[in-house]
Amino acid sequence: MTPEERFAQIESILLQNTSQIATLLEGQIKLQQGMEELRQAQIKTDAQIARTQEQLDELARDTRASIEDLVEMATTAIVQSAENSTFIKGLQLENRRILRELRDRRNNRDS
Image 1: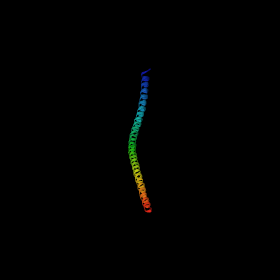
Image 2 (image 1 turned 120 degrees about the horizontal axis):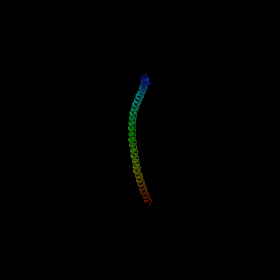
Image 3 (image 1 turned 90 degrees about the vertical axis):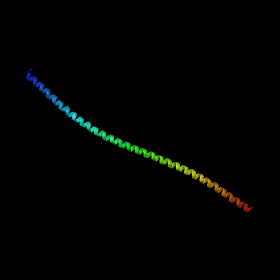
Image 4 (image 1 turned 180 degrees about the vertical axis):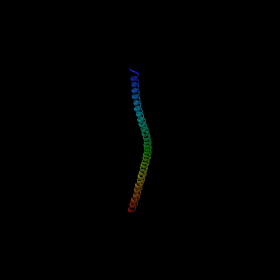
């Protein structure tokens, strides 16, 4: 192989290498752009996850408060019902006592 042929061969190899380097650099730039887009998407996703978690926490607090309110209302209703029942029983006893007294008075008048 002559020096000119050898030079041409080296030149050809260098041109191929330069072309391959340019292609690799383009690929690297596209990869970096893709990575940046991914990073931006991750930031947005993380922010959305944080907002969703805050909403879930708020919903849990509201649900817990609602349950506590319902339990309190049910407890109050049960206590009130028991008090009403006791009051009604007392009224019934008082009515019976009054009816007995009236009956006894009537029987005493008739005798």
